[in-house]
Length: 109
Length: 114
Image (cartoon, rainbow over all chains, first blue to last red; front, side):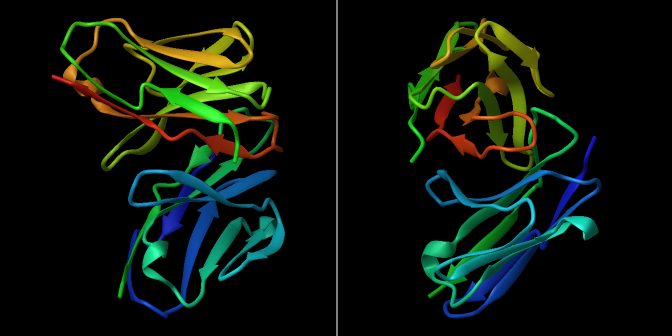
């Protein structure tokens, strides 16, 4: 099956810093999502981005499907950005999303 | 927000007792999934459904069964709970299974098996 790797596994920032999270996948995908799991455990949809670039406030994402990666940019980070960021992909007509192991982000005030 | 409700949200039970977790959706989405999340293991798929009475196993299905008698409800049953099934369980829904359609998660159900 498709493999999904996220990097870095852990990230610690000071408030106000920028960061880039990466999601690499081993096969072509037609469905890619980014999620944020906050410290209370909720899984929040950030972006549905099988290709191209999207922006939502301080967050943006880019997926280059031909090169099999996606990037999540967080600018001017805030303590509320802390949590775990997951990438999930689907390919080949599969019902089943494949998740990466996540990037754990801690933003210090 | 997608209309997904999980119940109960928290449950403590004893080894050997049966437990049923319910996922209820108001979106009329076809696909529903049960995941468990444990430290160091990320999200692991237990079972999924691609329609009423159509279900299949995920990667960690041993010890779990599911049923879907209505589009809106997907039940996860632990016939005889074990301590290894202590976990946080998430339900997810998707309008389309094939390559398109966003996946949305419920709030999670924390199960502790003593």
